[in-house]
Length: 87
Image (cartoon, rainbow, N blue to C red; front, side, top):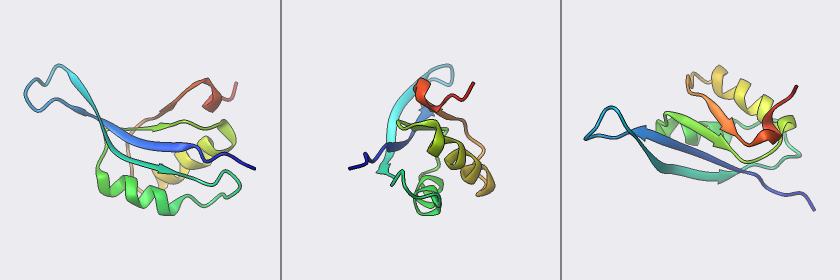
């Protein structure tokens, strides 16, 4: 059984204080780590208009997810734990 890592599109500037950030989860979705086409979830993320994407999975999916998000026109950082880092 494979896990389904969560993709969260979140973090926006505070509407009342431009010097602070407010963490607001705009969207939470999962991906199938056995697939390589993440266009469905990327489309949802793009519609949410986040300032950043948090991915709670591992590098084998984080790399393609980040590349596909960039190709779709999302110009936001993809963040996550140390599992998305490839030395």
